[in-house]
Image (tube, rainbow, N blue to C red; front, side, top):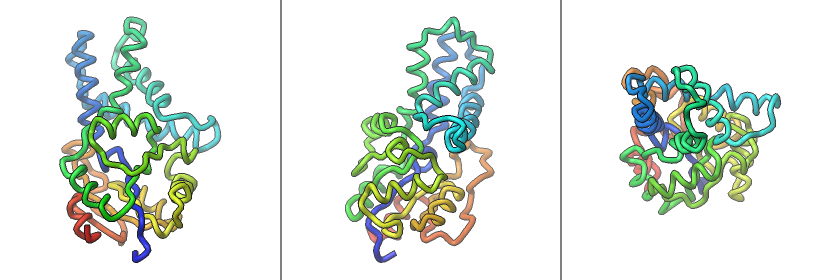
Length: 238
């Protein structure tokens, strides 16, 4: 990849640990409402399971493009109802604040040091299904040193739609082959490669908890395969 100029990153699961952060805020919410026996990690998983179906409504055209914060909020109501929470007893402002759990996710320990190394040589930016405000708040809190923050509404598309990858490269003023997607999800890399982007797989073996069964190994011969961001930075000569 001699022409490589930019690294774009999947965020949820690749850069930040969504499961622990969401479970932390859900657990505190359940405790405040006398529902501390609810498994917060199971509730976080249930919230995440609604992520792809909600975006598919937009990808399919059945629904206009809608920011992820809005989709997450709708999904939160459904998950809480499934777990027996009476939504009528909870102030809407508190639910809105709980929905922003996705803005407060912690980076994996290697994320910030690795990003700083890669930033010294390449443009770095998120290529996420998150919206700009979500990614901005996350970056400010977690110290993610992005050169640019490109949310899904900038491209007007959700991965794995080709527009999500191609418009991101175009916004950066680059050709697809000058951009490499870094992700812990093989399916994301499949879609990026189909659009002409470079590909880098980074293992996140506990994204879905200790019993994770997906994305434990690269499914193809990606351009880079790394154990963490530090390893990837070394491979990139950073």
